Image (cartoon, rainbow, N blue to C red):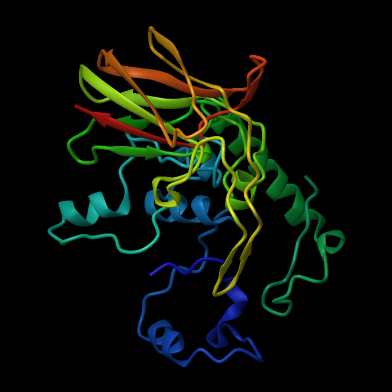
Length: 291
């Protein structure tokens, strides 16, 4: 079990003087504990490092968006190793895979006191290790993993701006603001065939026109701002040798393109344009179906 956004000091069995976690404390007491495993302090990198035993820059899942959330397909995971040993494995819940400071976590759970000045030898060893680690990962750090489209395991596939290479847009509020960004998705076409690309500004569940706005929405734990309207007049799809554009009417909720694609790795880029021909943004939601 991996909990999201929970730190080492958030358990009473680790000495937290305020939080009481009796059930997790019991699990802790009955378990074998590995006490020197370190991960990056973000959700996707944490999960990827636990699953592979590899640093996030080495395993590919180094961010929560920007096309850098996928594990490298050639790396075995914990599940592969357990399955090979005869275990039945399953995954439930969430998958979504500068300056130096030093803290004494035994006495400073909140990481308030930087003790780096008192441990020069330790700092030197850490910096030496860091330089050796960086030399190992830098050759592959910009080799993006790719999403698979057209596989029997998941057809259709929904793509979002979080899949755009090195372009940060992964929040609902950003989509509602009509943030004018775009990027290419790295994809692997599973097999040669005819593929349908459905481009939308809003997800299917919103049932809204591409150029329309959305009203403010209230939820149990907060509120989404109103979604701004964009004067979208044209949509475009570029993938492999395919490059086509279509007009967008005021009432269109989606624009669909059909392309025959060869199997293999390529990039997909979608675009929405205004009446003046200027690009406004990428299609925030793309549904890809192999026919």
